[in-house]
Image 1: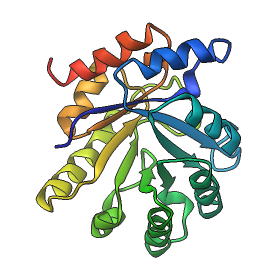
Image 2 (image 1 turned 60 degrees about the vertical axis):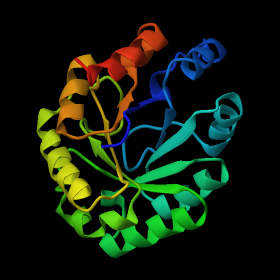
Image 3 (image 1 turned 45 degrees about the vertical axis):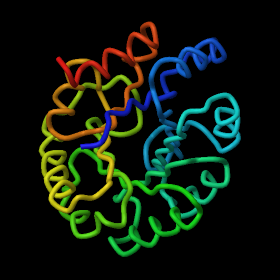
Image 4 (image 1 turned 180 degrees about the horizontal axis):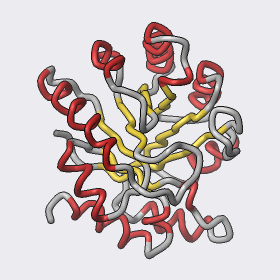
Length: 222
């Protein structure tokens, strides 16, 4: 399995302390920054546009891990790639079929980015198994997408176990990411199931940022 990566979600950033918290994040041991894009349609919330991503890109050396929860992932993927995304992850539920999923992954890669596909908690993983070679990342949602601060859904780890087995058997360099309700305890469960990227929002930003990130990194060893 690849090295454990922490990708703090700036959905939980304190926007009255942006400069201070970004500086702390940059020195926390996190390697990625999770950037949640919501359109108010695919999920009932609105968040960030491409200009905000450009600003964070200038202020941080972290990998920009962009998760688009939108009805039109083809359009949004291109917009956020041009804005500086390093990784664009879209939802399988938002594309017409698996062929459209593969086509969009190839488009993201052709623009110089890494392509990820996300699954809601109750979406089966089966459709992705034949096309794992086309992906750089799979993001398992362990809460319903749209809002931070929700409780971890343990049944989603069954998909992680299936994916890790397939990724390992085929020796693929595919990251396995999880998002939703991650804290030190659930992080350990996710790591044991096979995740190598942890998204955490409230847990990181509601305490000392470096302490939060380091405790997640240590979860793999406890």
